[in-house]
Image (cartoon, rainbow, N blue to C red):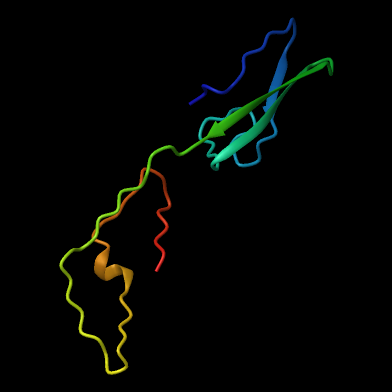
Length: 107
């Protein structure tokens, strides 16, 4: 949405734009995606006479929800002749998930 877009007023026509390169449009943050952490976005308004004004906002993205691990239980493994077995993650992970993407699975 446009919840992070500023409003402005001037007595003549003006254009507003921001410096956030990952937004699909330089005149709004609608549709923009942000990485975890804090991103500073600077807005600039330029009127038809070349007068400018700027303001900056910090947008903080955090993940405070733990992932959910779903594991297979009761697994019996036959060891190889060398006494070892490499267990792939896909055998024991039965649908682990998180509210954020991408979900990183480490083997």
